[in-house]
Length: 154
Length: 126
Image (tube, rainbow over all chains, first blue to last red):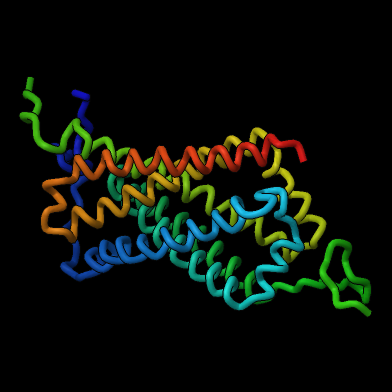
């Protein structure tokens, strides 16, 4: 194990790649703390998610529309999945942000990559939140329930 | 020719490789998460579309992928707890190597248990 990997942004940096110092704000410290706090919560949320969805009963074979309908009929799993969505996306996006900052040397490259990252993260978080709160176990189109839905007995 | 920095407790050793593993597993999990929110969102399209797309996750090739994904998640989770211990526990930096070996041992046990269960479900022919 003699190979070593240079610490990102630690070597001699060509003048065109020098960056201005941060503004001295506490954002990076708060982000660092958020990674640790959200990490602990995510271990519980994701291990619980994997256990309930993959380990119990028929495992992955049980997952279909009805499985999701059954879970989201309960506010407990709605809150669980919402917390998991937000914490995992913020945790993951901040991790990828760190990696972009470490390895993209040109200012424009960093700006573009982070712009794409933030746009993708916003779309996924908003979409996922809407899906959890607008989920309908019995979707109806033109007065006809769609096949596979869970509708109350007439 | 500049010489390499003298050996340290971290560079080129367990600390550095756990950092590499943490980054790689983190990126893998992040991209899966994007796809996973999109596939779950299909419940708003129609029950049949969701159930048929999610069916793709049940074939054996995807089953192996899920095994790899869970292995990545479990490593990232346990190594993340180790990082927290290094940062917040006063003896953490001193025992970071021992904690990595503990992470790896628990990781092997948990991933093996998951693998036996999940792969027997996936390959069990339902």
